Image (cartoon, rainbow, N blue to C red; front, side, top):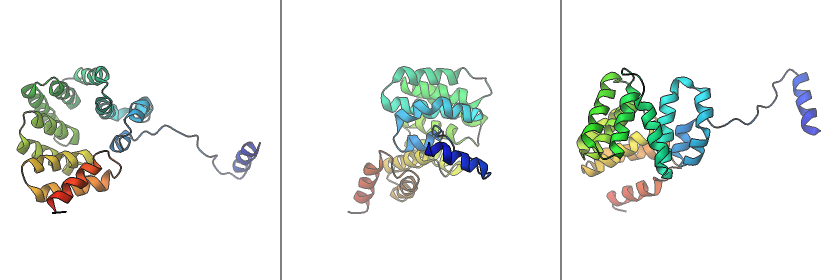
Length: 206
């Protein structure tokens, strides 16, 4: 009764009624907070709200399914991306991601390079190139790719995280620290935060 009266008063006053609770559509933020189950639950609503970003949202969901160990869903999404048009960079991002989990590093790298060639301003193309290079492993190539992804999209927390991990492997502690600091600011609730803080303490001598 009280709620109905309040809504009526708001309408009479010319004020909009309080919005209904809507599903969280910022899947990347949910992923960065380790809320993988919520990511996959909110995927349909996120796509409905932003159809033009469907492939990116599906890619984030695939990463969430991977964290949840639900490999059938991971493969299903990557196969769907791989079936996109030949001029769509997400086709090759999907192919690369699928090849990486199948431990086919040469194919993963080749497909990611194709994605970068088609979309040199797509941060996810460089991100996947970094993931493919890590499988080889070629940490120099991986670091360059992740850093490029972070330059294109400075808010891409996991581009910073993987860039930092690559530089850690290369013993470039200065660049590692820069990217880890960015990651901690962008994703303070990420599951990797304790690991990152531990590495930073170690390299800084306590």
